[in-house]
Length: 246
Image 1 (spheres, rainbow, N blue to C red):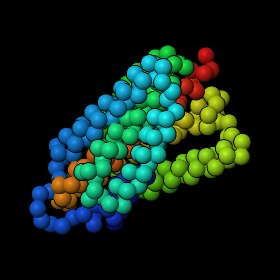
Image 2: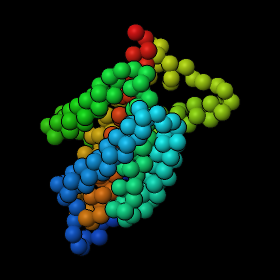
Image 3: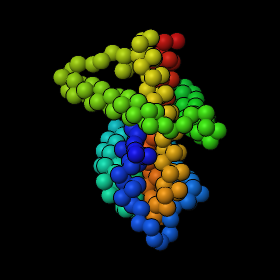
Image 4: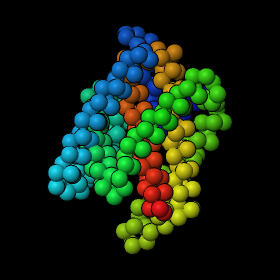
């Protein structure tokens, strides 16, 4: 039974099942939420720093590269060594803050007011998805997991192809441009990212029910942050495409 399979590689069935020892302190929902809040606070802190740096005249490229590479490396390490999450998850949040702060500042400079819209839509989506999950309007069934995993992996593979083609000067128009197809593509990706939140909430609940050890609070909080960062970036991309058509 694949209780934890989803498009978020940070929280898989194998990782959570492997962590269950049946002894010692176990994870709680409140503990996971508290740790997620701490990670979010750290992310906002470095995001604010790079935001101020950009509008203070500094180039954002260095922050973006450092944040993207640092965040990716740490995320991959945590995905394979979940016991390191209490130590590395805060570092991931700091690096992602560098990336998001610089990216948001650039987007805000190009499209006035876009960041406020993206932040409100992101947190509105998170709250909405949690309500839908809590009220069991959307349930993380086996079929739901399978379809969402396939869609998420397909998007990741598609982005990878686009990245490689970029080295040869080949651009896939609807990924970056504000055409009708480009907007529809971004809307589809936003929906997939949002639906991954359902699986994140379900994995936290299942981890608590199965008695996963306390360090999994950090691991699950990290996994939730990964999804929200992805969702925010895709919403920002969608809004930028829509604004470019005005």
